[in-house]
Image (cartoon, rainbow, N blue to C red; front, side):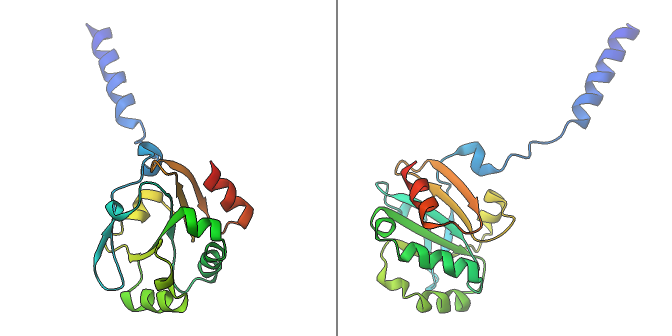
Length: 163
């Protein structure tokens, strides 16, 4: 009986001290997450608006970040990206700062580029960024392909969209 109780005690202690799963959510589901952003006009935007026949890039950014601006400029300079991909720009900044960014890059010209405020702070917990920009690539079937923290070069973007 003592051995049985000792065994139960040891198993209880082991399970009590085991670590919780620290895997980021985007690696668990691998599909495009359900999210909600507010456009610069305070209209709710979510994953259901996206075209299922196109690749998707979710970019976590800050409107004042030079690296984020450079990354967006690269995307906008790549016709193949603009033709085959929808880009979701997610910021936690105010509508005013996002509007300035939107106007600076004339995003109204790009029907596949969506800018929204992550008013529920969803993507921070989902992707667990260490730096910005964060670029999450999803294929046409809305399945996860790649997560990149920091800027990417033209060749890297092209490769990520082919995978």
